[in-house]
Length: 209
Image (cartoon, rainbow, N blue to C red; front, side, top):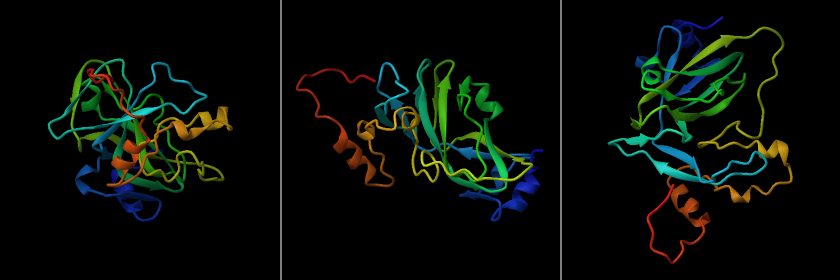
C-alpha cells in the first residue's frame, strides 16, 4: 500500500525525514525531490564492474546544461531523506518523462532505513536542457509487512555526495579504490578533487569528455 500525501505529512519527523521540506512539493501520494547543481560523468570508455571507474565533476549553470544521448549522468537530490518502517522509492515525474529524460536506470527501489541523498542515473533519449533546482523526481513510500532489518550497507548509507557505482567492493574486495576521485562535501571539495587529478599534458588541445 502506498502512503497518501496526508499520511506522508503525518509521518514527518517520525518514520519519514525530508530535509529541506517544502509543503508545496507534497503531492496526493508522493513528494517532489529537486536536482542538485552538480553531475558526475564517467571518464572511462568501457566501465569495468570490478574497478573503481574514474569520474569528472560537471557544474550545472543557472542558464542550464544540455544532456546528450548515449551518455550516463549521475546526479543527486538536494534533499536528504531518512526512512524507517517504510520502503522509499523514487520515480521520474511525468513532465520530465515527456521530455525523454530518465532519472534512474532500474535503480529506483530504496531500502527500509536508508539515510542520505538519492543518486540519480540520468539518461536522455534526445538532447534536453536541465537546470539546477528543478523538481526532477518524486519520492513515495510503501508499507512493509514482516520483521524488519534496516539497511546498513557501507557503500551508500549516510552518503554525502553523488555516489558512483561501488560494485567493485563486492566483486573485488582487494581492489584499490584510490583510482576513484575522492569526493569531498562542501566548499573544500573542488580543491580536493583537483588535487587528485593527474597533471595536464603539455600539449594544446580541445578538452574532451
